[in-house]
Image 1 (cartoon, helix red, strand yellow):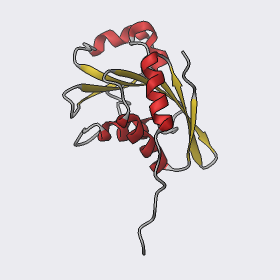
Image 2 (cartoon, helix red, strand yellow):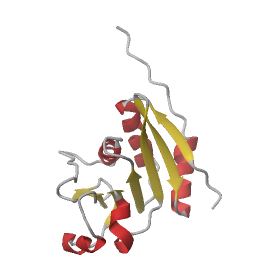
Image 3 (cartoon, rainbow, N blue to C red):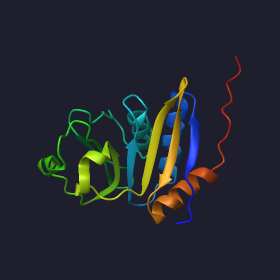
Image 4 (cartoon, helix red, strand yellow):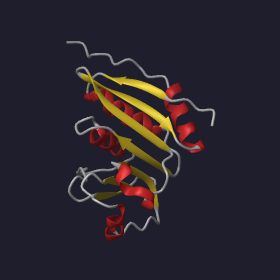
Length: 165
């Protein structure tokens, strides 16, 4: 795979949300993204912004306690946001009824706890706290993921301009 890992500074929550928008804008038709990072690194903030950009309306809940939240997307697909932090064994995923028909986007937090029960990632988003902000590292894990990262990397980001006061 000739795609590169991309690092993106996220100095504040707005930057994390902007990355979610960019990821949504360039998402492949079917994609699996693993969101990695310590507690408080911004995984749910990123997922919320990405889902909102894909047309999800209403409350977007963190799946910390429910383990999986399902959202209809504006393009008629469905997104699943999973948080596997609280599972002890990958076999527990059987009890969630993960019938993947119609799922066009998987956002998985703590994917390493799902063992081989999850689809393989196209993209791994590694988030870490860095000073007062965060750092994102986009790691392609498939050809589709590589194209996704390349599109995000090459997108021209308009500098934010404060409105006149």
